[in-house]
Length: 264
Image 1 (tube, helix red, strand yellow):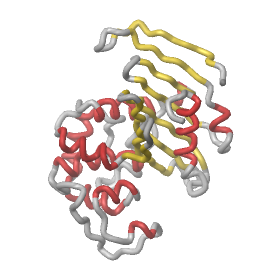
Image 2: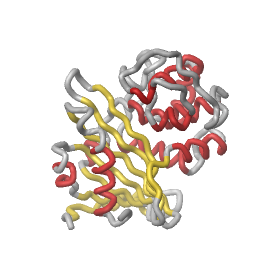
Image 3: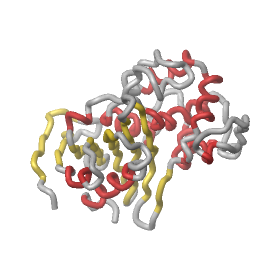
Image 4: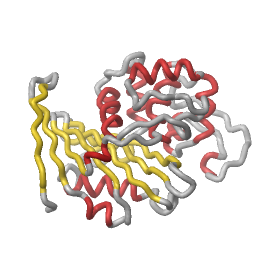
């Protein structure tokens, strides 16, 4: 068991009336297994407790990249661009490096395969003004959408921190997002399930954003449900090898949750 090296109790009172607690834990050896370092934050809603590794980095904003597909899918549903997970999103025949993109999609496959062209198509129909209204109402990241209007989540000044990812996910999961119906949230909850066992359900979305010509920020954000209790999380790290370390996003997150005895 890695050493629990700091527990900080804040004098803030939550909506449930309990003091909010932040526990710092050392997960460096888990990140070291993959030759990277980054940050991790989890929120145990039942106990109003945060667990953090590298808490300073948890406040550092990065481009959201494909993690924005969670709010983007909600917006596409609310705007009627897609009505459900059965609607076909037609491929225009343009060949992409990812072969899974070179076919018709549904909302479910578009988020599963992180299909860029499908979400660029949504953005062309939604328009940047409506996106700004939604992002402002969500309180999502730094709310700066002044980048390219059909791919502002991939390039430009838009930033979100790991802590802000968890804040958004809490509102999403608990049906607390303004302008978003319960039906849309339920649809997106269903399509972001990554793994389900008899003991837990892991949901989330990856992201990989370009920082420089050589460096990427790698994300996995979401929540684990166990015993009818949600544990929200956000994990990121930097790497210069996007393809080699894509799977590490899942493995690091799952290794941490195993150490926390939340999953097996």
